[in-house]
Length: 262
Image: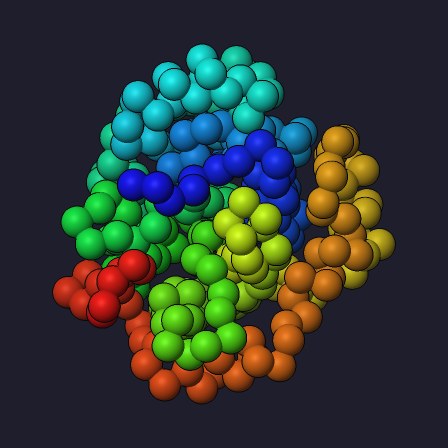
């Protein structure tokens, strides 16, 4: 459909910022669920944490996985061969529903496609879905989701702010942050929902200690200082999050779409 999903020149920015703020906020992430993430770069970053014992990646389209594994091996960088990695082919929401509220994961990462009308992912951004995610998190668990692009214009920021407000309606701690991703030609947003730890409260020394203890190497964007800076928002974003005139809590019966008049 002509919409960029990933690109070699800057995927590392997106994936490091998607994964590490939440995993570092958790004292000892052992089991991680990825919804989407077919090119393997999200799993690559998760597996850099030596505390992680198991990564389940639920990809709805086996062709995405197979094509990326064959033609884009640098994206997963060996993650698909890691014994801790498991692929589940199926619908991510149905997978979580099948867990029936059993606390299973320390971190759930939603690396899904945009919420498009008629697409496979628009029900991965609703209050009902976030409540399902919360029910399968172990104590102190966190969810993180990509949250679309950021615009200073309220008329164009409805989706990203609504995702934040939806997470805030479900989780005791909700944090919004952004990073410039050249492949997406702009600032991209991320939202963390936490049942315990506040990622914005971590200091650089504690972050550095956790990075060292977990043997994390080869990062090109994420640092302890960057972690702290991610959660310092410009004034216009703070105002959008609190005062956006049409942003709302997203529900199954009232979904939200990008690239749409609605």
